[in-house]
Image (cartoon, rainbow, N blue to C red):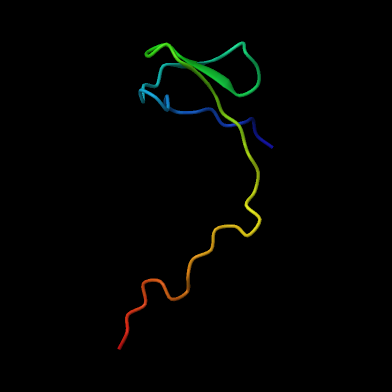
Length: 60
């Protein structure tokens, strides 16, 4: 297994100047907008994402 993925940009200002925060696991700080945020995995969807088989079909 590899290490956990890091965010590429701030969800508030979209700048890329991010640093891990000392506030705990998944916490990040943006040096550009001076905000701190936390990323976490909520879980898997019970049914998953399924595409409607009739979606995009054309009627003849």
